Every structure is written in structure tokens, then in C-alpha cells.
Length: 247
Ligand SMILES: [Zn+2]
Ligand SMILES: [Zn+2]
Image (cartoon, rainbow, N blue to C red; front, side, top):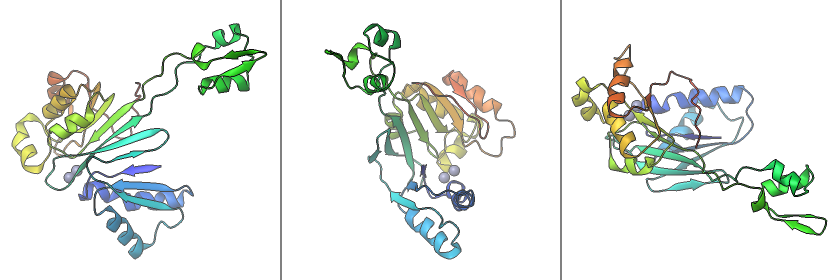
């Protein structure tokens, strides 16, 4: 439903026209929202003007700034400044708190028959059974906190990302280089694996996914080892790997 773009370097946007093209040919009809820094509107509209590839579904494009947030019924997306030489955004996606766990046995004990009344209770409404009024809080546990995921790529380790990422269940952080190439990381506005781990630790994020590893590392396991020395809950995901995230 949404694509979040961090910044307008080629490796972060050249895939977008191809992806829009593929989605169109796969028969997508649903609207897609693209969110990104200043310039993203011009990029998408100018490619579309010249090539006219993806006009089969509506696209809305929105330029955002650090400090902004985008809310809908399910999620709150917050935007912060990354530190990368050109304007670059980091994003946090927070799921809104979910209703507490429904206690089916208790609902039965209270004489509420299974069916639409259960649904009402689960959504927080009270229901009537005969003359009695049953409050949803009697059958619902405490509200459950939603999942929080932070994406900070490309960036140097920085205070605004640490603040944004505070308490994330998953932090996806720039981890372009190993310690031996720390100068390069500084020069190009990237982070070493150890620096990414430092951000995970200081933001008290639960899991760190090392991301945007430089192509110069055929085997990135030394980067994982470096990160783990600083923060043991670091992982090195493969492309297209699915990572389960629970709050
Ligand atoms: Zn970049
Ligand atoms: Zn990049």
C-alpha cells in the first residue's frame, strides 16, 4: 500500500519505476502511496511522463520532512533526519495498540453465546444478554502494544535516528562497512556494523538487522561478528528473507 523512500540516490530509487511497471502488469488496481523526500514527486512524474509505463492504477506521491508523521487506522509512520550528505529520511512504522486478548471461556461462563456478540466484545463494545449488560473489559485482557519497526538507511550513526528508533522491535540500520573501512564509512555517510550495533544498543531496540552491506564484502559474516560484539541481538538477513516481528 505504501512505499517509503529514504533519499534520492540511485540505488534507492532506480528500482522504483521497474517495480511500478511490474505491479501494473500484474494487474494491480489498488491505489499506491509513495512517500519520500523533496524531489520524489518530480522523479516519479517525470519518469511517467517520458515512459508512460504505469498508468493502470492510481499513485499518490507525498513529500515529507523530518518531524512529520503520517497516521492511518492501523499505523503511525514517523519521519526523522538521517545523516548522509544529501537529505535522507529515516522512518519508524508503529502499529497502533491492539485490543487485549479475548477470553472465550470467560465469555461462555458469562452466558454470551458465540457469534456476533463475541465480535462486539472483541472490538471493545459492551453487549446485552437478556437483562444483563456485559462489559468488554470483563472478557478482554489489557491492550497489547503494537510492533515498532525502524528503517534507517543510508546514514551515519546519529542522535535523531537513536531517538526515532527508541524501543523498536526491529531496527534495520545501515551497516555498509566493517571496522577496517571506518574512514570510508565516515567519508560516504554510511555506518560500520559496529556503529549500527551501537545505535541498536543506545535506542534499546530489540533486534538489529544489518542492511545495505557494501558489495565489496563477498562474505559479510565478519560484519555480523563485529556487530555482535557490541550488540548480541544482531542478525544478517538474506535478500527476501522474512523476519517475524512480535511486540
Ligand atoms: Zn545514499
Ligand atoms: Zn544506498
